[in-house]
Length: 447
Ligand code: NDP
Figure (cartoon, rainbow, N blue to C red):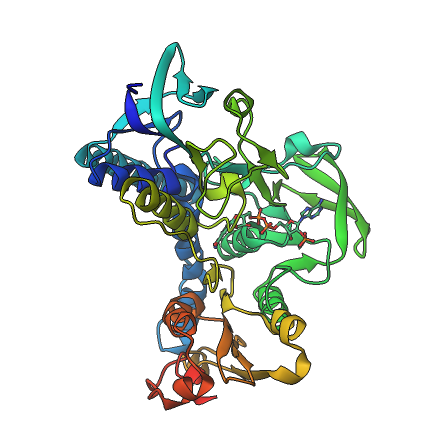
């Protein structure tokens, strides 16, 4: 049977864009369907605008730090509307760039919402498009909890479009988004209270990272309410009143509330049932090659809820295309994925946490190397900020299983360390590497 396309991709986010362009480069006839701007969460309302806002927020530290280096103290004013509009402009520029890249690659862009009609057909409005293979890369969306007053809250998506900067913000959730937005808004001058249901933020991260980052955030002016949950949210005079339960039981008055309690795959009205695509735990079920229960339909990225990170979605998309369109079967390797939390301070990790390594190998077989110090930069600023670097090592074969860092430039440091960890470097290899002095990163080879 002749199809309109060899590959039809639903969703022009990181995974879908990467897959469609690579398939076209192999000579496949490809179309991609999108009902929003092109770019997906990362470009439009995630990594990119978030990182731009992180940069904006860090100037507040720099203005203060500069005084220790002889610069006159200044009383800078921040213009929220300007930032929001500058970020929006940049996001739109990037989205346009993605459209021209699709054109250059020879991929047809179809605007509208794609709905599966059967295993080879996708409806976009009135139009029906057929394809030999279909890739679903529709991403995820924020979860909202069913508590009274939830209609008053913002999600991360709303934060990029607020017309006014809130003076007081409550952030609910201690994951990536909660920690990052708490840092951004605090740095921009908002009074931030982060409400988490456990002792520490970032469950699943190394214990030292969780503690150091949370202490650093508190030092930088963020109030962290541990072991606390929100029972209800009501409108109050000009703002919102939160009723809290747990360690900080009582009420909290704020101007806005950001909910960042996780994301879930965007699967509503996608017609998965029409095409026999199975869903498991609210996500599209796939095998290692991103193949769904329907052999010609594949899915990558957040909608499969594996490792929900942009570089992973891109690799999943390309691996699918290499396998299906180039005869080079491969699948994504989920070991040693480096990850950063662009909070204030910043934290990053690759490989095993101390807790994870001990659970797998037993305490006797795990060695921990840890350095905690004041970075040279702060010797003149007077700030109390500390850097923590940590290596988790398998005592039996000396292999470095994990590396973690909290503090200035942590994310920039860990990418290089991730290469060594991925290659199976030993602690001896780290020790045999000449230090780059003076730097923060050198502690990884001197501790
Ligand atoms: P996360 O899953 O990272 O964190 C969710 C947070 O909400 C956790 O602290 C969780 O607590 C808490 N939570 C969950 N349910 C409840 C509840 N019922 N009541 C109170 N608290 C609750 O989700 P995010 O929304 O922060 O981020 C979503 C995803 O986006 C991440 O998993 C990540 O993949 C991606 N992302 C990556 C970034 C990066 O790489 N820098 C940046 C931003 C997002 P508990 O731990 O107790 O479950």
